[in-house]
Length: 239
Image (cartoon, rainbow, N blue to C red; front, side, top):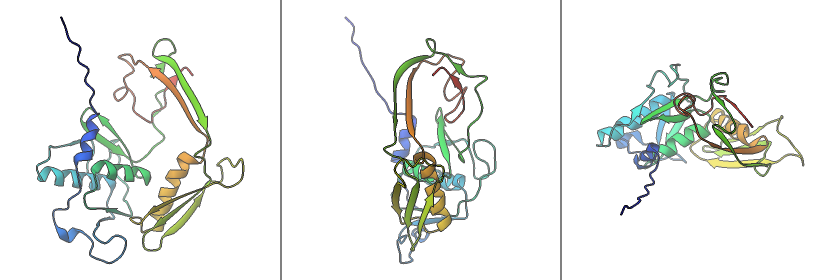
């Protein structure tokens, strides 16, 4: 007689939910009155410095080391980081939330290779279509496909801290019934340039028809996601 045991586990990146922001000194938290009082400011540094600093502080508190595929000078593609304008972090904020906010602000894309966290500014992705070719009946099986305009907008407004209020439009967005608008609030955004970048990131995703063309994928050894191609790469596949 044999028993069957099924195990379900999260991806390794789940560990970031257990890394909470705690500055090593209370002096690092802003004492100035306003929306960002009690928050920590990173001014004029890059995203790699922000995440590495938080990772190092977590390790100093006794947390397990999280391997990084970048440093404070170069991103995971070996390119020098651009500087952020200003970035605020709340006490107790989880590291996965911090990464999501950097992504929402258009500062980074991030991914895992094994147990190593990689990060770089968003790009159009590498052209891998001549190398990675996925074919129907071999690696690809048909699944559901959907399209929707439910989330479509052509203008996005962000209400930030210190009186920042910025509206950004996307002229190329479809307008089947005129202007559709989105709105967000984040009092940690205190510069108009940062608000504009956040709005542009939102419009890059919501300023167009949203389609989900799902396929069941069984990759072969020569076409391994995360090894032979990464999220964001352009590949060739049967539609």
